[in-house]
Structure formats: C-alpha cells, structure tokens
Length: 124
Image (cartoon, rainbow, N blue to C red; front, side, top):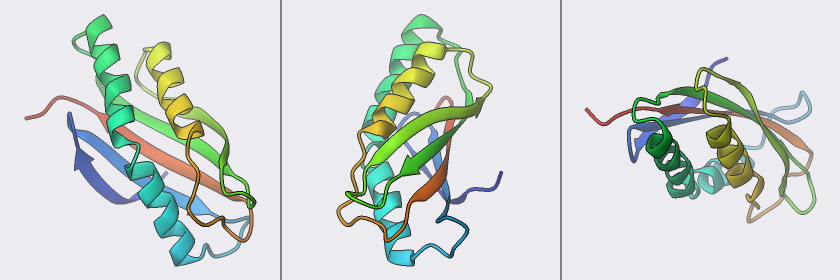
C-alpha cells in the first residue's frame, strides 16, 4: 500500500493518504479537503497514542485505516483499522473513532474509499 503526502507531526506521528473514488479519478479539490480534514484530527490521533503509551511505554508502529466517505453530506460513515503492527486494540479503536468524526467542508461528488496511513513512534 502506497501513501502520498506523508508529513510528520507530534510524537513522530507520520500521516499518509491514498484515496480512490469508485474507480474514478478523485477530484484534487476533494482530495485536498480530505487531507485537510484528516490533518485537523492529528492532535486527537496523538492523544490516542499518548493513552497507549501510558499502558505500554514502548508502543510504536504502523497503522492503516480504511475510511468510507459518503457523497452526501461528506462524512466518514465507516473507519476501521485495516492492518497494524501495534498490539494495542484500545488505541486502534480510539484512532478509528477519531476518523469517524470527520466531515468534509464540501462533500465529494461520489462515495470515496480512503486508505490512511499512520506511523507512531518516538521523537528522535
């Protein structure tokens, strides 16, 4: 799985996004809205990680989310951990719940399936 637009935030939290729109080319404006909405949640993703660190100070790794965004009103209707090497299920649930709270400022023309990559680790 390839992610583009990787950025580093917080506790070395690496975000990446790859989307498709029902097999069609995704409008770059919609892609920008999705990326911005996800990045706006980075502090909440970081809070999920910080909670996991309280349970296990060595937790780190990758997490890939699968997001379903409906065309109207542009909300994430489903978010689930697609795969991860992080063994903290509570953290996975927290991250998925944060993603479910996303609403785009402008809904996409068609339903969108998104793959969202996160890398959690320690600052170096």
